[in-house]
Image 1 (tube, rainbow, N blue to C red):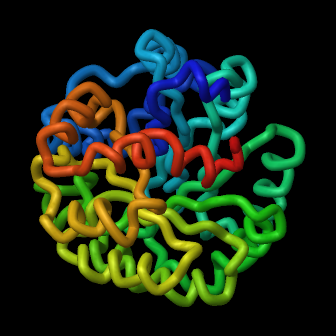
Image 2: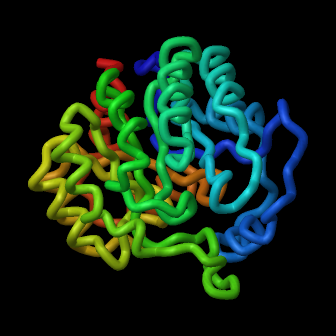
Image 3: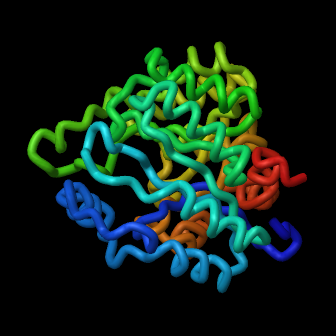
Length: 287
């Protein structure tokens, strides 16, 4: 990334529409429920998302969520996102997503994506992927990520995916309690773990973990900052100012809305450059 030209780095954006694979509308009811929950509109292609961020001089980390085992939907290829990142290396980084149910085969894929495709991190969603973060089936994946000392983003807290559906779409919120990441942080200390989102209803657990474990970060995506719990703002302004990250959850929330609401949410002026860019640059080893 060309850091001097970027006003911020959005650590949490989603690839929504593949241009390589035909659209898979299986389990599309989850998309419609999420659209209603977030009041979201049209889902952009990867190229449209990149163009949107380039126009605004914002860097981005992009990933899909591989939930083939639980939802039965074909994922967007990790390779497609990696190719877009290579084509836009001045402002984009690719993370991969591999369903932990794929075990050793998933670990083989992770190694290939790192070595051949230039992937710089990984994304997990314990609720949508239907696994507990310390489950043995995920260990081969963690071993590879730790070997290369890469970051991993884990969804935490309430999920807009499944919200309002019958039985919540069968998705388990309890899988995304951030305290379940503690053993992962202990046993794989070379993985920089990013707890995604305000972790409602477990915000205090997330803050406690980040205070206790220096390899745990928090990204502030998925919520408008005007709805952040006061203790999250308090620690972002003080003890955790060096491990808080700007993320939007685009396209479900736009960076413009997030940044506008951030300016009105009680953050100290001196922490803004840290949260918007400098912390992410350290996490991604761009500095």
